Length: 179
Image (cartoon, rainbow, N blue to C red; front, side):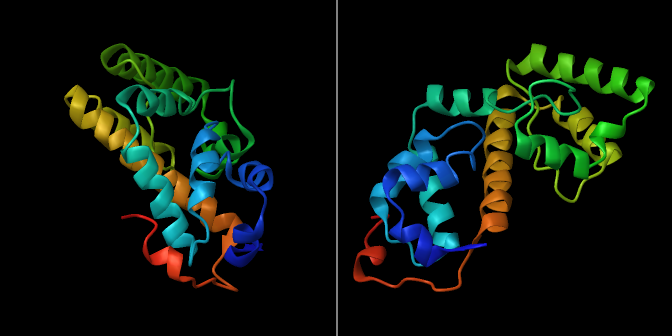
């Protein structure tokens, strides 16, 4: 595991190489947040990334949502998405379950214009399907915001898996970063 102190000392290219995938296939977030170093903790780093996304345009947010794969799909998965979906049992859907997921995914995408996004950690295929069934009834703006919140959770889990607060770096500048 890498420490936050190490992360703070990375060059911009090293930083982006390490964290550019935290937000699915969207390295511009890591690239821009690098300028805000040093980060006193992984929580602060993550919050800085989230604030950057929150301040981004609707088009950039939409592109971030579109970067996520359909849940239960058998194609176009990043290594991290594939692992996360396997942990939730989505790689072991029966042919009938796969058809149900595919049909509901298609209904969801047709309604909202973007894939269903859920931080699947702690979920199983049944709870994921139930969430999709419930959320497909949402209004578009509500679902857009829910997808963004799920993306923030996914990115937190991923960051926490690779960076630790050991060797936390305190610096005066860190108090002013998000003002």
